[in-house]
Structures are given as C-alpha cells and as structure tokens.
Length: 265
Image (cartoon, rainbow, N blue to C red):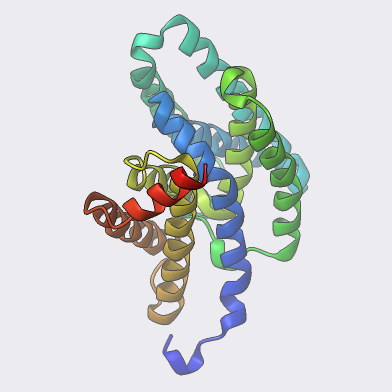
C-alpha cells in the first residue's frame, strides 16, 4: 500500500488493541523478569491456544464466549500447574516451563490437523490478526483488563503467587486472541529487558510503556504502508525500539530522569 492510499482509521482499532495489551503486559513482564521465569508467558499463551484449538476440533461451531471459556480454563490449568512446579521443582522451573511449551505447541499441531482451515487457525494464533480486531473485541478485553490493572497496582500481588498466576493467565488468554502468541511474548519481555538497568521503578515502567507504544505504532504503519505481515513486523519494531532505548540508558541519557524522580521521592 502506498502513502497516498493510507487510511488512518484502519490502524486505530489495531493501535488500541496494542495499547490494551501493553497496559497489562508491561508491568507483568517486569515481574516475570524479576522472577526469572521468562518463558512462562509463551507457555501459558500456547496452552491457551491449545484450548482454542481443542474447542474448535471437539466443539464444532461455538460462540465466541465458549471459545474464550475453553482458552481461559486451559490457561488457568496451565498456570496452576506451573505454580505447583515452582513449589516442587523450583531449581529446574525454567526448563520445565520450556518443556511445557513444547508439549502444548506440538499437541496443538496434532489437534489442528483435524480442524477445518488448520493452517489459517494456527497462523492467527501465532501471528495474530491485529489489523482486523473489531470494537466488540476491544470492549470485552478492556472490561477484563481494568479490574486486573486495579488489582495489580493496588494489592501486594507479588506476595501472593497464586494471585499473580491467576491474573497472568487471564491476561495472556485475552491477549492471544487479540495479537497472537508472538506479540504476546514480545510485549511482555522486550520492554522489560530494555529497561532492566533503570533502578527507579516509576521511570522504568514509564520508559517501558513508551517503548511499547512506539514499537506498535511503527510496526502498524510499516505494515500498512509496505504490506508487511503486521504481527511479524511489530515484533521487529518492538525489538528496534527496545535496542535504541537500551543504548540510551547505557549511555546514561536517562540518568537525569532517575535523579529527578529520586529527588521528588
């Protein structure tokens, strides 16, 4: 698509979808990085996708809420199992989470072979169809994210692992339906990685949000203007924005922000 044909309204719902995903994934991603369970997000996302595939294969024509229920229950079961693994096998937790992801992914492939339009289903779950989200999808995800964000920022979630896993699984389940597994992982990990050297939590959170917003904006515009696959190019633009900001942080361009907030505190 050339610039003259560009329709701004085409990317507005997609951008709002990205902003919704970032609203929860940025703080959750920082916590995931602190806990050292990097692959929990992609594992739970893949388990949620497995639930969607299972619903499609065994349930036939289902309503959207029924598919969401399958995905949500699958993600909650996966989160509960990972929480159990954390208590029983903490020393090898990351390896076990990676194994869980592989099993869920391969199981999804096996089930998808029995689903109609299996290639399209797998593509949508992995890469997403962010350019084609509708307002109804945005509204129900926003209705879910608002209480999740309230609970996250107003309770001692970090002291309650069960609550963390519950919020995490519900959030990832909704996000996979909007943007796909690849962008779910990128939205959680890339902003958190880029800002991990910032000692001030408030500054780190703000900068991580900025990385995410610019990453999604750049990816969406590149997709529409140059006809790139939206999910794939947005993963790369998130990476690019993260690398740029990480270099600025390393060269202490953000030091004044941290000093300012430390003074204000």
